[in-house]
Amino acid sequence: MSATLYYFDGRGKAEIVRLTMAAANVPFTHEIIREKKQFETMKADGKLLFGQLPLVEYEGQLLVQSGSMVRFFASKGNLLGSNEQEKLKIDILFEGTRDFNNFFMSYGFNGFNEVLDNAKAKALPKYLPIYNSLLNKNGSTGYLVGSKMSIADIGLLEVVLTIEELLGEKELEPYPEVQNFLKNMKSNDLISNYLKSELRPRKNDEKYVTEVKSVLY
Image (tube, rainbow, N blue to C red; front, side, top):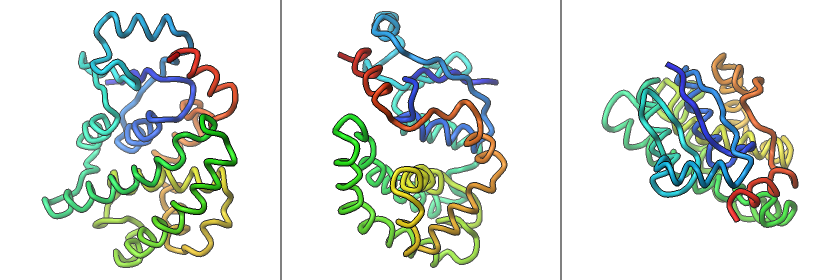
């Protein structure tokens, strides 16, 4: 059954949900929120438990909180690990990718170059060596934990794609395992199809920032 994702016309907090649904082979459509009236109506109708986006409608359920959505759809695609030890490690590494990704979430909202300069100075040297080492320790699987894709990989993919797009491939050159990981993840048919599709929004720009602010404020 197809899911319906409600969010702005950008990646933001919904991108990790999109990537997870793609990897879990859950079809979805995207309802773009462009006007404050749409947002206020959704809140008035009780669809947004905490008054915020994203929202996913799936099989009669209203799903909020992006982390909960990720785990829900990951369970349908066997992306949470094959035993309790794997599940714990995957969850820890996934949460690490969320901290890493947070350095880029305000791109455009707190300036463009300012956000990238801060991420380059503080986030890349902290997180990339850790994930590069973890990939190396897990051997030739191409994944962070075990021999199958998990939400830890999807979380890292989101950040590495952002680095590649906004800062350039050169920033990944000191981390060969991360480079190989990116190549491996991009070669996955489900991921590749999503990245090439119209369902993947553009990166943040002035238009997107203006649209989001007009809806929320």
